[in-house]
Image (cartoon, rainbow over all chains, first blue to last red; front, side):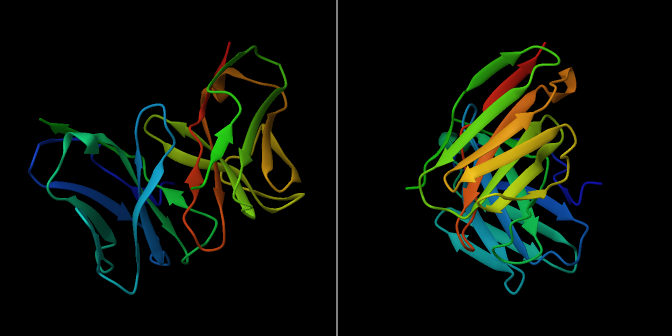
Length: 113
Length: 111
């Protein structure tokens, strides 16, 4: 049973616009959330994370929002760039630094020049 | 910068063969992981290890085993390869509470 869900397999956005990638989870015990980016023929790379005690974390063009009551998080990329085109995975764990990560199925973002 | 190296990028094996996938990390991380990535299923954890000679089953350990004889090396073993084990295999390592760092993956085809 998929505890972390990314319901949009793909997303296309114009360069310069905002990209919003969504992720839902079912386990209310999840305490820590991460986003990874994956280019073809490469492994996933860590992008940004958020603890459940926060509702927002920002790092440059990337912001993650967490809505615990809705069990929903989103990744905003502003402005989007062609180099952002990749597959994005969200992941969750029961505590910060825990070994067991639960991954979503990924969303392929295409940024159109 | 953390380096996680998987020995093969592409591998083709036959049904019934014993297959070894090797992973080496250079950051003295305690924790190492093996995942498989399949379309529509995301990354699923096969096994992880939190210390030398220690291992824990992940979500899909059936048909796989692992070996961690040295801290820097974590091997995934397919005891008798089957076609449903055709997949992308990803190794990761992690130190303390830091995020996992991934290798570039091994695309394994079982014929």
